[in-house]
Length: 234
Image (cartoon, rainbow, N blue to C red):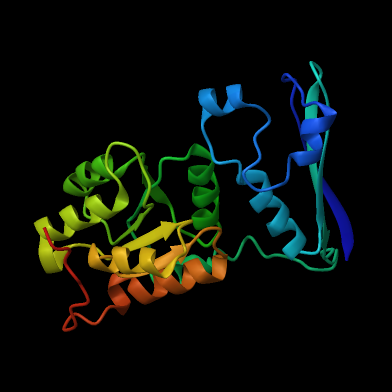
């Protein structure tokens, strides 16, 4: 294991020493002006701290007012063996051990889009991306998708409404829709099922979990005689 440190530096307004001491506490905001301008709950850095500590790491911030800030975290990570050789010429991609699929991801966050695209590509799948539920419906009308991964909270139209509309329109021929969301409460899963979604992936997700869901709900693995849809009441 080796301690690896990640740092992000900005040239913003900086943070006072007093505010810096409160930064990683739940519901903490630097000032009310930032809250009114940018919104948020003050939970982001608190959640980051918990995630880093769960991985036996630590997180911290350094800052001076008017000079910007540096946010860092370190994690104990295994060192890859230099003797491990990857055969890139074989052309055998694990993601294509079933068959290529047409996959749509509905996700409004640009960073999440980037991470998801790289993760899908890593297991051998190219994906199309819709910025919200309304666009996802339009893309489904233009192209037949094998699977749709749907975020829940999106502008214009959220994932629950979009999923229900797609299933209402296409019925049993609708592609399996998988919820992909940071909402992990049991009632959130119930809402997804009521909207007709087949499965639920919580963020952040592992490659293994993603592969399992693709393998489970890909058309070649689905039992056609079984209808798992649960339609939402109007």
